[in-house]
Length: 171
Image (tube, rainbow, N blue to C red; front, side, top):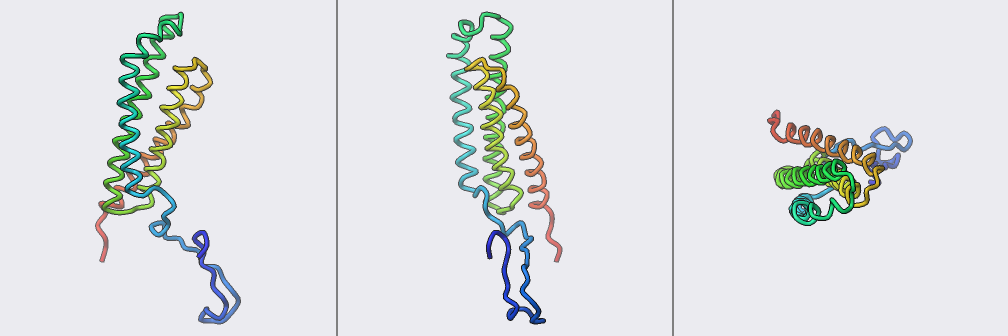
């Protein structure tokens, strides 16, 4: 089996006619994405750095941001940007922990994809806001929605995964 494709020789087929390729369509058998352990560790790391960055924003950044930005309204907006980044990072760190726990119960493809979207979305969304505040380069604001779309996709996949997790199996 190579990349989800199982190659069969003509002699292995019941009708003996030509070689065929059977495509493995079962999503639950594919495991190229995040394992429960990595989802849990990612959730811990995202949350821990969120706490640290929140403390930095509240104590260190608030002291120096007035020196970086001469316009008070811009400085205030940048602090709000920082707080938004921290808030979303914390939400999605906790979501990664939740997904990691759910993956311990059922290693579903949709939940693994959700964990990847949460992790990548947090890095891109919050990271771009942090870069915007620290560098003052407004083009980072154009990167932020990409992280938001990844986070939204993560929530939709989580919902689908939890739906499958709680759906009773028919016998």
